Length: 330
Image (tube, rainbow, N blue to C red):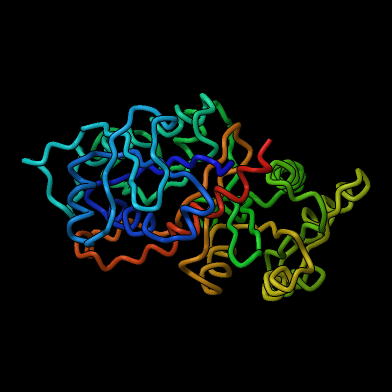
């Protein structure tokens, strides 16, 4: 049976509602998954109107009540947007709070086993902050609400998988975080995430930090002091891992199928590689949690929200990937 995927619309003032509505019209989704939208009825009705979507809105309380046909949009309505205060394309505390509640409800459904996975639309960090939501982003929210200490972020695009040793820190701090101990820990946990997703074969590659992986210490010694020793010890314990491999070639090699994944050593190293390859089809997966979460990896695009011109490709890809991996998720 097709998995049920929860889709929170996130910030009502952003492009989330419209890309969700547009995505649900795509025939490949109804073939791959049963989709339950978490949001506000008034916002969804508005999105259906200005996108001219050919969908019938069905209000439900639980996923099991849904009518999963191609022309239905099954919605759990949290009724948390006051339209007299709502301005599309504008940051607000109300929308930040609403987005958090959609995420919270989706995680609750996943924790109870009522949905197989969650595929998230974009949130706006300013709106979350205005609402007093003390989380930097999705990853931190999911970590807190699932009791996961340090969730891992993985990108997937055209079969290339990229993990990140660090995320939202300065480049200076990210370089300081490249230590033998951290690499050792992350490779072990990344391998567990791959197993959760059903990926049990192949070699993980660790990217180099410095140009040409430091050229034996000529351009930096992180490779000599931290990366190579970590790889050697991991290999001795039976892990199929290699590195460091120069960042100017490792992602290309992964794309060719040489590696099942790459451990990027800082945020932009992996983001640039993935998004340059295919921005719209770069999908984020939050791993190491008891539930599966996929997500678009773009923002709320407040400047074009409500115009019906936002591309739904990333949302489609996120839902499809959630359906694909939820069958293997353990």
